[in-house]
Image: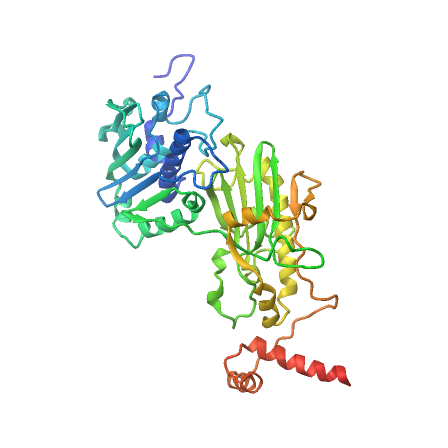
Length: 466
């Protein structure tokens, strides 16, 4: 009640329960719960950035049904020292933070926001090795304005299998409907986990959805022998940058994820355009997947994304033990475009894009056969393999970046001669093209680009002899 010289400015429960969840998508809310599981692993085992499989043996299992949702992990549980604040709606000023672990959460809202998004009753059971508890959000808690306390029951610890189970019941009607279709939201969520948790899964973290294991979608690049690339022996390799910028460790890679193809008549299954673009990672968690907008440098001093560039991909990884330094939004699934660190690194992302969009402009006018030859000596490698291979790059092939410091590997890409080139394009009847293909190659199935290029080369050879 307002007093004579002051008014009440405390938040209402309805704001948190109903309005607070509107700006977060359903999949983002549940991914928040997965992020908490990973944070539990870090508390349990510590941060080991150079370990090959630091999350091996740890899992999170999610179950979706129209009646309830649950997520169970074995990631160490919620320790006693943070139980009192774990259920607060945000972290209070002055709260002591652990700045030795590379988490992504800053404000302490993920678990509560997810619960409010899903339903109107919840139980959280958590056990560390030493102690445990059970906290319940009763149905009437959500609608009683002056009821903020939650009942808690203390439990014994579990030295063998410490972890947390969150079960949400009385799902909201729209949520229950979404969870009722195995080919709807649940299938889409599995695909999102494959993408956003690709790095964590590859490092040993196990995620199951309704009992089915979720595989990682690996991030890959095409490379030649990095030890041999020089001005004399050129090859296909990504643009690399690495440095610690304002307390954040940065690793950037930009290049081809598949052999270049431009002609529409070439095999459309050889690549997928949705694999192009920038993937941004913060502390092993993907926060932006295959972005092709100005946010990641496309169209800002570089060409806007176009299908011509569908084989170009990039990944930039940010690591810090202080999550406030990371360029991530509160949803943990978006880039903070105003982050000073990100704006600095974005310049290098644009440099990498310019390198390969320019190279692509030269590639597209070459005959398909020549392009295939350029990529014939390359191999497909994932991030783990690429990180091992880049250590083989001679130190002389790295140079210091004049703006941000750190080191840059700007590969010596193949050259095609100094003459200017232009596109020759025309249309002919399909049966005529097949007839010429049969005449030239003894098969009617050669691509129109190869048929046209070979015809031109034959006439060019005759013209040079006159």
